[in-house]
Length: 291
Image (cartoon, rainbow, N blue to C red; front, side, top):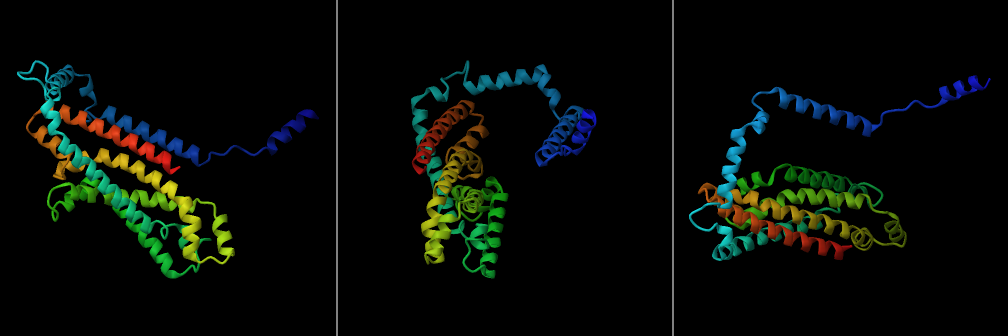
């Protein structure tokens, strides 16, 4: 009797199902296995080069030139005047990143509210009008388009009608990151607690007053956090847009590589590392203030 009850109870238990996470994990593992199978089976993949003596001998010779070992003169990173020469490009790189971040901040502040679904057509919308829906889809489409084009492509396009310098680089970085920060900030608004907005609406506040006094104060910390995180990414990407003449350390890096001045490249990477650490520390301090 007890056995029959146990069997009936086990039969009544729901069968385990594979959820979305499990399916995603299986697909990921399958794609990873297929990728490694392609790399290992393809003779032209370059994977075998990792195990050749010539590859590591060439890497050692490059590292020797890169560090200036056994050179006729001291390497650039050990000469004080060369460090002084890097102050100008480092300042241009920092200015480019700040200009791009300010463009992103101004653009997102103007657009992320109507780009939130709950503000445009949800419970925080005042009229559910057709124009607000059109504006929502228009802004979201702009977000998708500008972040879908890489910064380097934007810089290559903008450099055709703007003179080389930090401005085309800043515009290229600003356009790409505008789509990223805008989408993330709009999603911050969509995930906010709607109760303060409902209380203001019940007290007779207008749509603009409700957004200004209930939604914006709660969304600003998230917006500033995402903006500062993207500033850290922007300062790292300046070296990429500098390859197309956008100024800063990236242009100096491209010129040094073109002239095979490897110790100058080592110096530029060292300066770039110090600049990135400085921006990361400033961003962490400002994010702490934003919270």
